[in-house]
Length: 472
Image (tube, rainbow, N blue to C red; front, side):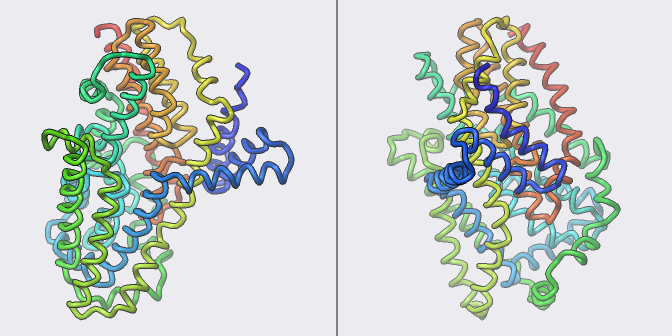
C-alpha cells in the first residue's frame, strides 16, 4: 500500500472537474499535485509538470493525434465555407422528418466512420449540427447518439480501426511478458463476445434512439433548450452570418470524404503488405493505421484545396476557415495533452504497482474477470483514457487469469470493457471531451447526463461477468 498516494491526483482531478465544471482546472491541479509529490517545491513541481506536458506532446503517437485533430478540424472548416457541409445537410434533411430519423441517420454514419473515434465525431458532428434545423431536437441527444456509437462500437470491430492494432499489441505484449504461447489477435477476437459493457451500452443506445426513452436526466432536456436556441446564444455571429450566405455544394463534402476513406484503406493495406502480410485481413492488423490516416488526411486537404479553388472558392476564405476549424478543437487538444501527462505521471507515482498490490492474489479464478472489470472501471474513470487503462491493466489481468486458471478471453474482455467504460463515462474521457467540444456542450454537464446509462450498463456487465466467470 506504499503507493497509495498515486491515486490522489486522479481523485482530485475528477472531483475538481465535477464540482467546478472546469475540466481543465481539475486536470491541471491533479497534475500539479502529482508533480509536487515527486519533486517538492513550487518551482521544482512546476518544472516537473512542464516535463510531463512536453513528454506527452513529444510522444510520436500523441503528436500524430494532435496533428490529425487540428488538420481534420481545418478540413471541416474548409468544407463548411465551401458549402460542402451545408449541401450534405440539405440532402440529409430530406430524410430527417422526425427526431427519431435524425438520430437514426446519426447512428447510420458509423458505416463510413468506424475507423477511429475522433474521426467519427469530427466527421459526423458538424454535419448533424447543420442538418438538425428541420426538426426540434436537443444538441445533447445528437451528441449522445454519436458518442454511444464511437468507443462502444469501435472496440467491437475486429479490423480496420486505429483501436484494433493497439488492442492486439497490448495483449501481445502482456503474453510475451508472461511467456504465454497464444496468438494475440485470436485472443482479441475471442474476447469480443465477452465485452459486456460495450454490448450493453450499445443496446441501451439503440433502444433510446428507437423509443425516445433515455436513462437518467439531461440527455433529453438539455436544460430546457433545444439546439437552435443554444446556437443562437453561443455561436459566433460574424462567422455564422457569413456561412449562412454559402451556396450548398454537397460534392464539396462527399468527394473529400470518399478520397479520405479510400486512400486510408489503401494506405493501411499497402503498409501491411510491406510488413509481410499475406492477406488483406493480415495487412489490416500489421499496418500502422494512425500514420496511414494522417497521410490520407494530408492528401485529402491538398485535393480539397485544389477542388475548391477550381470551383471558384476564394483562397483567403479557405485559409481563414482552415485555421478557424482547427482552432475549434484546440481546447480538446489541450485537455488531451493534460490527460496524457497524467497517465505518464501515474507510472512514476507507482500507480500500476499500487493497483497490482490492492488486487491481490487471493481471488478465485471464477471472480477474476469481474474483479478486473470493476478495478479497471475505477481506474479508467479516474484516468479517462481507454488506451491508458488497457496498457496499465492488461499485464495484471492476464497474470491473474494464468495464476488462478481463469478464462483468458474473459480477462482480456474485462480490461477492454473497463477502459471503454472510463473513456465514455469520465469527464476526462477523450471522446467525452471531443464530442462536447464539437457540440458546444459543457463537458461536465454532458458527462453527468450520459453517466446514468453508462452505470446501468456497468451493473448489467458486472452480473454478466460473474455468470460468465462461473461457467467458462
